[in-house]
Image (cartoon, rainbow, N blue to C red; front, side, top):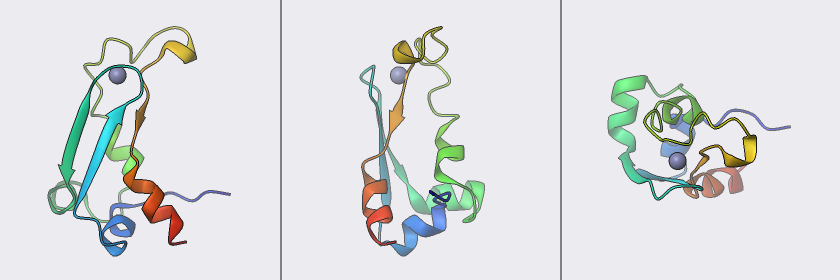
Length: 83
Ligand SMILES: [Zn+2]
C-alpha cells in the first residue's frame, strides 16, 4: 500500500527541486521545494500540490482516461526508494 508522499518527505530525501513533466504534452516544470513548503506547508501531499499545475492543459479533461493529461515526477522515485 502506498502512502502519500509529502513535501517534507522530499526535503528529507535531500531534494531541492521537483521536476514535473506531463506524459502527454510537452509541459515541464521545475519547482523549488523550499517555495512549495512556504506556500503549502510541509505536510501537504506532493500530488495535491501539482494537481493545480496542469489546470491549463488542453488534455486535462479529455473524456477518455488514456487521452488525459498525466503529470509525473521522476524525483519521487528517489523518495520512494528511501522507504
Ligand atoms: Zn498535459
